[in-house]
Image (cartoon, rainbow, N blue to C red; front, side, top):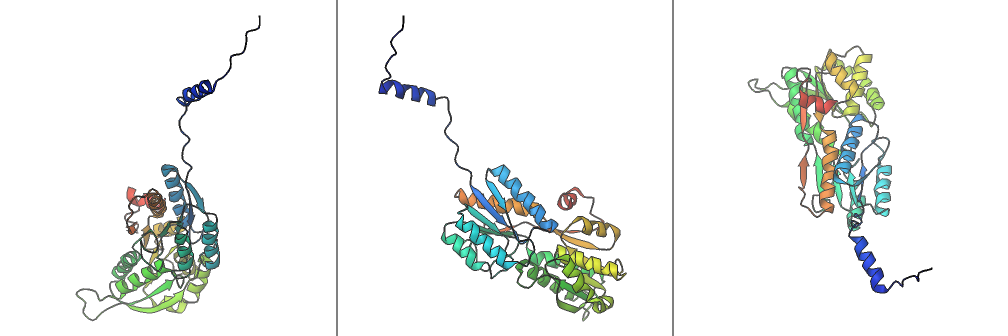
Length: 327
């Protein structure tokens, strides 16, 4: 015999829904999206920053979009990327400005749309937290002085030196160069009246190691007169190294560079480079994203976060804390 189908009253349906709800968790909140825009994407340094940024995204539960110019002299493309992400309404921006002035207006446009901006690696004109939320970077002038002081020691506090600069308008390397030159030319204690002379301090290597090599080869007359060389970033250090090798001068002139990549570390082991000032790019990428997440959560963020730098030589290469930075 067919049984009559029971009617579902409004109360019965509501009861079923309430009962079923007990077994289900509320829908998780939508993951925030943070766009990270480096100066470039080819140098080993930036690949390490990317690894740190993406690790922070995994740990903190946010989506990371990593996109930057191919080379570190394409200001127009970097401006376009900031504008693109603002129009796409990402939740936050993490930016390493190619130019301390050219990116000011795009950052203002982002903050006007309530998109918080973390500046990292290289400074932007303005102050945190007024013009952007925080600045996450190496103390560049201090790091440059660390390398310059070591070069002065290697040279015995006397003789001539040169510096191959990076790119005009790059705030981080400008500061490194300033710190290095001040340290190199300071009069050595106990040697009154004696100081190292900078015989070339106004040449720029450009955005790539190939450009830097060409610039260094064009400086060979000065290099042959000098007892020491300083370079302020990965591409200028590699370009200078290649030029010195081509000229048969590698290992014959005191050489302090900046940043670590496999070719530079290998040259350090061989004695072609005497020291490298090494930053913490993974830590920088991680801390920059972490700062952005804190801002999105309404947490307090320091206006300036120093990610540190160390001097690496053949003598300390094997130390665990150094290996963690260069591998």
